[in-house]
Image (cartoon, rainbow, N blue to C red; front, top):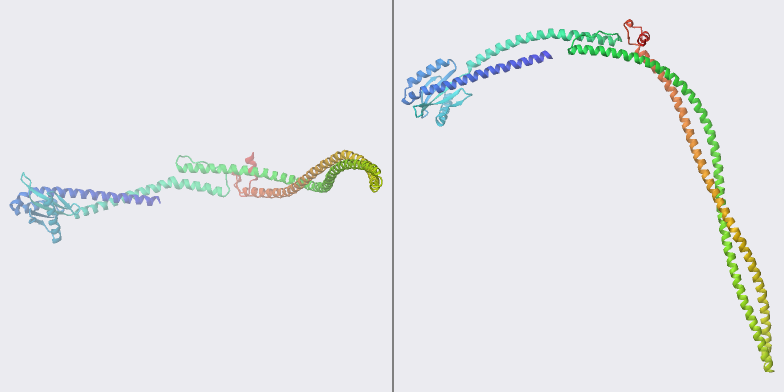
Length: 484
């Protein structure tokens, strides 16, 4: 790849150099054509004005001699663009281009250039006044220049090829000394590492990139040797730890099983106690309702007795009124009898009526007295019942309050036992999970111990000391030496 890039760069430089040489030669030819055309137009300005074609032809011949093969043709025109003299061969098409460029030079009064600077028309200025008497048009050829450029290009290519071959040989020798030999040494180290040989390797002196790579590989081998030794020691610790974990997890599994059985018994007992407490709470709630209803009935009975006492009082008052009416009626009947006696025979019938009215009044008064006595007795009994109910209602209310407190305590106790039962069930689930986890831990510890043995067998492939070059040594002797 490097050789290919070198060849590409060298070819590019060669081509650029050849192009530069051709460009410089072309610029030189253009400058020569420009200067020669201008100087020739000055020489033949008078000859064009006075029509001396022989002089013009002589000047053109001298120009062809000096320009060698570079000048193809030269034509002199007067101010009317009429050809006066011609040097060299020129065809019809070239003559037309020459005539057109001459017309431009006459019109502008300046030098006109065409065809990449190889067709030049220079006005012929005569006299101090600078009168334009005509124009000289020259045609130049770059064939000779191209041939010389081609020859130079061939020489440059050959020179570049020789230099490139020399450089390639030197580069191959240098690469062999600086890359091939050190890389073979690095490959040898890599091959030994691939075979499991991690014995110490001598670092290579130097400060270049290959030496640094060699030093890095040596450091990597040393680090790998340390890592393998540490891994072996860690595997021993892992194996011992996994055995201890397996033993502890087995004991933990047995303890968790016993704890799970005890938790299940406690859970059953708590559930039975919770059911009894809930039944007691329900009975207490029912008793609370009955006590509250009894207190309410007692209050209503007290109100009824009070209303009865009030009614009896009103009845007694009404009986007193009836007694008074009976007494007044008796007095009226007595007065009527007295008046009937005074009236004699005429008042006898009235006296009989008065006597009957008096009897009725006396019976009414007697009945009213009996009713008054009964009403008084009933009133005393009602008062006694009211006093008893008045004393009984607070006791019933206090009983209802006590029953309410008992019911509330029973409910709180029921809630507490429910929470205890839920906690015990959660504990039971956790215990069962611990049992399963301990069993899983035990199996994982066994698996870890098995994998540690596999890793020990795997890293046994590497040899850490020079004495372990035999392929059957494993890590037993090497690790003892590394540990020491």
